[in-house]
Length: 244
Ligand code: SF4
Image (cartoon, rainbow, N blue to C red; front, side):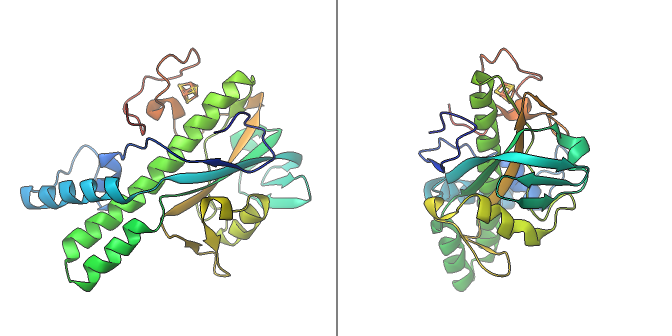
């Protein structure tokens, strides 16, 4: 487990008691939060896919931190000279001193099962299980982001919300730079020349770390954090991505 959010040695996070957020599954199915509900026939498939997903996912992540040597309005340079070009990151994250890089995956078993279901033409279940896999990877990334915040509190540091290549204007081709800063192999994740991760239900992300880092720039992290007794909580928990 992570002892320091500034660990420069890659740390593997395993044995994660991950709770899949059902709302996230529905979002991947195109349902609007708080408005659309699945019809009874769909709800049955949804329950089946959730149960299969919980059995098949093997959540795992690798994490390491790197010192920041330069900051610009739209860029961050990490020790070793790796420059990440992320639009508006200077404004969004403020004065970060390090970046933390995490590569998260739920493993291959779920996507193999989705492949089998497509082969046997069980299409509704295949599509729903695929959404469960995508939601699980998102929840895992959220879990790790929460965990980093919790560890950082003990070090009097703040951790920003995560950002991933391919989102918020950050070019997906910089996925290679992310992998050069943190190897995916300890979590069993590889990257090909087209920036495609294997297993596919994987997420890489970056967070900013620092005593003066700006947090919550697009989402109040505490809303999904399970740390009940946190004295620094900024919002009540609506739901968590950790099994109790
Ligand atoms: S409750 Fe908020 S401040 Fe406390 S550890 Fe969780 S995310 Fe961080």
